[in-house]
Length: 501
Image 1 (cartoon, rainbow, N blue to C red):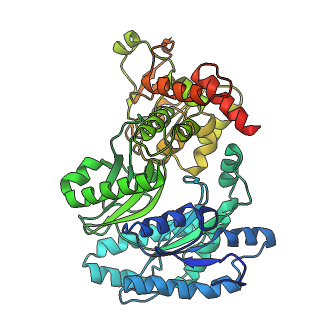
Image 2 (image 1 turned 90 degrees about the vertical axis):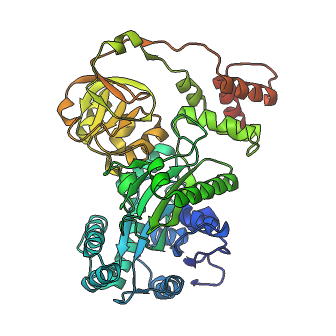
């Protein structure tokens, strides 16, 4: 499926023998083929490689005819694996169409689920499942997502749906929010995105179905325990978008212990293989576990330090690799100040939620993202408050002193983005709890998930020795070419400058 024998392939069917690096396959497809190679259950998929996105960027052409001609053969591979047929009314195959850059850009580009839906397919799903409500819910999700991403109502022809979805996902590489994200992180604009087309599994099918996110270790505190959320009868973006309040993984363990055990086993296998903490998206369909994606987890500054040390102690990485994963800002953040406990004890909070990224910030609550960005640019400390965040809010989030949301959990969009940006964040404060705070000055204690009225006294950081910082300092001194001790931030900065030279 190549345009020329020596050209990089434009389409690859993913399996345990797939060759291709992350730059070609994109992070999502690369993780799929990696999980397949490890024997982990993954729905079948194929990928349009990043080479096509670069080709389209260079020529300005839409989806080339020679590439589109190869798509039916790739879809046929999914049909053979699932015993379902795309654009058919007997055992119909629905697919997801998802972006996937080589470097993870959470929430920046577009996804469409349940593609291939028509009136006839909806009726077939209702008959096969015995549940018209499931079929209607799946149809509703598809219609809404397609119209939002592609910008028009879905065509009645599933193949035309697929073509337009592929073009829209490829075009999302050049969306303003994706460009802004790359510029803020120094990522190249010419890398391109891949497009992964994958057979759907349905977390919204029945009471033994759902969707979730699992971190192999706690991304907030750095604790060794698995951490995540689970949403029965949910699908796709429900958890990561923060639109729904998910349950703790303990709920999955209680209702489907075998699925929970299998999930933890797969998570441990992926962490050992990658030698780093993993962020895993999974779906359960009628009691059967499927993993959809695994990537290196975004984490808080404290978790970055704790994870680096414990992975070195467990022998998964070297001391040099542990030091490479810690930045001076991580250390300074860990030793940050805290609120005066005497003030805290006598003050009633105005909101409480789930800690998503620790830290303390005082500012004025602003509920409009554009207004928040403008006021922050003028030097005002703003606390961005939203029902839930989405990629269009990232510019405002990046300049806010803190972010608080009414909905969502600790794996929601707001939580993940704020951990990457090291911005204090509290999520899930409750519907209707934050919008009335607009214009008020508040203090956010994101370590405890509490929002207090007014401004608080902040106690300076102490100099109590932290054992993980002590170990990192010891390792940094041991490899320092200067042979002289220093604080850990100083030693890490020296290492960085030495590498630049």
